[in-house]
Length: 344
Image (tube, rainbow, N blue to C red):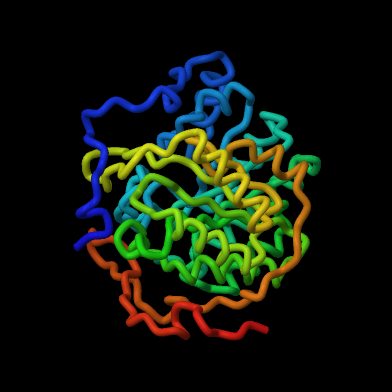
């Protein structure tokens, strides 16, 4: 049985609650930024993932740039980004992103990407070059990276950290039980320990992750995820409502109320000790990112400091038009899933 089967889910025809309604974008800054992106052949996750905050953020002159193309090599069941055969790597992309950031005179920029599992380093070198290019063009602009898991490659992680971003983000997305279905190319403990390794390698760089609520998770599982993330020394947590991109994606299990999101913020900060929790129905990874970079200081590393699981030896499932997905299924053991493992 699939994780969401047997649960009551929201009908596709049911109207969204009032707190999820946002104004359609169309202000002058939004239109200017859209033209700027098109003229420079750049992509934003704001558009590709259908972010509900695109109007608010773009009107404020901020955006999240998506590098490494706009086609993902994984097919997560909640994500609106296109997946399939990846595009040719664009070596000039870091320069164009930096030029655009400078033209916008941004104070803080977020760089994210699709998964590129077919690349030896997952695209880490392009991330690092983009961060450095922005620093060269606009030194006063802080840079946040929201990276994939690079199949657990700690060397690729070190490459990105070496460029000196202000924040290293990697999203957990959901609780452990739901991972095999909704995020089949990812691994719960790989993501947890990947964040822990970041804190060990670069303790002064803030670590950040996000969890999507409303996909069928239980309150006890959210608490467990918070506990696991804090053991990895994660500083910042974002929590937002799952919005189904299409009928081909998993259904919404429930609408989480604004009051519940407020409770989770309190629990995350007061009970588990996150330095900051951004929690609300429309919150996404990059929401209020500039404020977080300015107001939050990095905390200490946790006991989880080494990558517990990777797929470095797994071949890419190319050729032809098949997806490049790493879907190796492992038998869960106490050592494999991180339970009972001592960490130095």
